[in-house]
Amino acid sequence: MSFCTNCGKPYHGQPKFCQSCGMPLEPEIGSVTAPPPPMPAYPNQPVPGEMVGSIVPGLLMNNAKGTKDTYYVFITGSRSIFAKITSQVAQSAMQMKKDAQQAKGMGVFGRWKDQVAGPNMYLERYKTMTPGQILAESAENFAIENSQIQMVRYKFYFRDEDPSEWYLEFLHSGGIFKFSTQSDPEKPLKQAFGAKFVKIK
Image 1: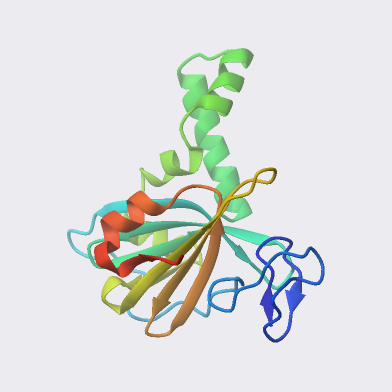
Image 2 (image 1 turned 120 degrees about the vertical axis):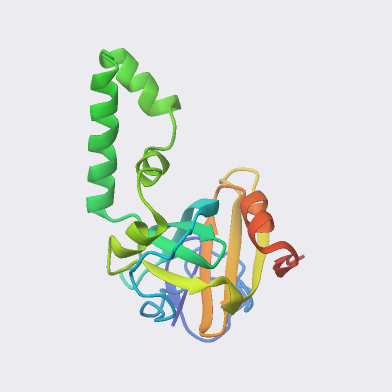
């Protein structure tokens, strides 16, 4: 079963359009599926000297409940770590941000302004963690060796009224991970994967 990347409704086979919202469905990149269990290539242990080189935030993946899960991808020299933003992660990041605001002596208006225009609270939180700690934080986090990623394909959908979206496919030796995002992922992915990062026209 696949899911429409626009409305999240499930569909069977390979129809050209979603029967619920009318969104075009393309066999190569028109559906988003949940990831398989974590790959065993890297256990939840530190890798000596490992550093994050590129970060891709806010990737959305449809789940079996018909809603979307949010992942952040942390790409090191050896692997790509997919970290799910769970409710626990969200609460921890929010508390960390509140503590930082209080330490600065911010008032209500200052905290609101910082919340709206300030740095990404998840990235601020992840800056305090090593790649190994990020991977080990949740059983729903998983990693893929960069050498196993054969290609990262993307397609951009421009919309006049609704937010424009990018659709991504991570093709690896174990299958395909599919995501959508409203943030341009081209710069970090091109930096990380070079010629493996391919645009679908």
